[in-house]
Image (tube, rainbow, N blue to C red; front, side):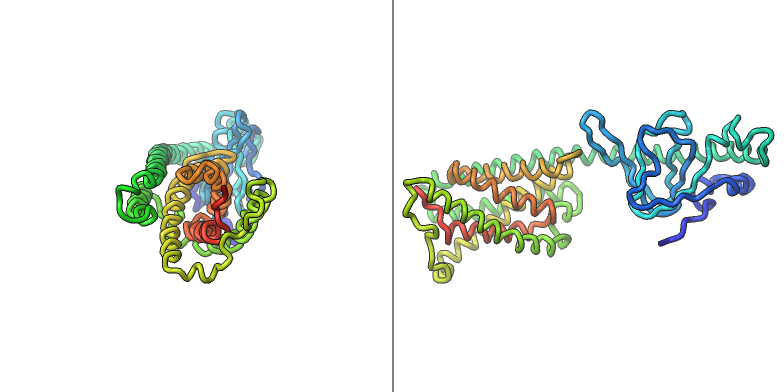
Length: 387
């Protein structure tokens, strides 16, 4: 554990003269905080001024209307805390909790004020402390002014970022709608165009992949924020390996129940294709699997990397991630309406699973692998040719 920085090296005290720092040194105390321990609690007054000398702390406020707690800021060494409450005498407007072992310099600010116990005529060193108090207040004013300037700049940057993310989400929704509409239109134009619709879809898939990457790069954020790059890649792969077998078992169980419940389906085979090895050795099937893999990657790029990531960055408050997962899964299901309404409804469940995997380890690799394996199993092994 690192040592607490000497108080004279911290910005608040460094702005004071040495002659005024010396009296303060006699009344300063150090408070140690464990992770999660509260230094200040929202709604309670304080008589001390605090300066963080070691560690990091989280500043948070409670939204009484939504009964949610929002993180306001994360602060580090040199941060001045509790200054608003000791200036206006009102309860603190935020809570401060240690994120790691912290050390805090405590100043008995109320006792230093005119009429306070430390500057009473009978108190020792009252004159020195009175002068130190005046210098401390001036230094606080400089520190607070600098923080207000930084906060103003940060607020502007956050406003720009949220506006950009809002436009990004709208762009992705338009892209996703165009993707679904054009894929749905392929069967209707199949007769007037040469080749299979599977092959005809490849240029469209490439076009929408380009659009998704272009939108992501235009945000200016690191590509890791959108599940690309190397970060979380191994973790997402591991989650896919763990989650895909139960997903396949669940899909199989659904078909078992469907075959038993619906009289029209009774007697139909559970697995439409039992010659799995031979089937996947067929060149035509291999080409279809390859096309499906490319299509799956693009769908995950648009739905998870672009849309879900954008919503996770844009939305705030309790349940924001859950809402992003559900919305992305719903729109993923919508992209399958061109196959059938039943299939689109059915696609919502794996979409939800992949959304949860992505929220846990945001990377395109894991969800794409699970998507390809699941889809190949459904289309080329289990089969979907029900009456």
